[in-house]
Image (cartoon, rainbow, N blue to C red):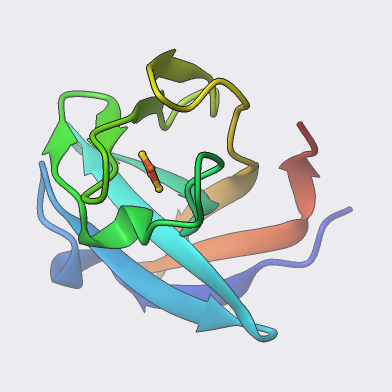
Length: 108
Ligand code: FES
C-alpha cells in the first residue's frame, strides 16, 4: 500500500494549470487536466528543463526550454526533442488536498 503525502491544496491547481511541490527533496509537478490530477517529475528528460514552469495543453505538458511535450497521464514523450518518458506518480484527492505517493508511481 503506497504512502500518500500532501502535495498541494486542490484549489491551488485549477483546471489547465500546474503547481510544483517538493516532496522528500523531489520536485513534483501537479497537473490538473479537466479536474483530474496527475503528478510527474518536474525534470524534462531532454536536458533537465523545469517542466512545472511549462504550459499544460490538455493532457500534455510543454517544456519551457526547447518545447518537448509529455503526456502527463502516461509520462510518454510525444513531441521532440525529448524521447525518453518522465516518471509519473500515483495521485489521490483527500480532504481538499492533492496527495501523491512517491512509492506508488511507475518507473519509466
Ligand atoms: S530541456 Fe526540455 S525540451 Fe530541452
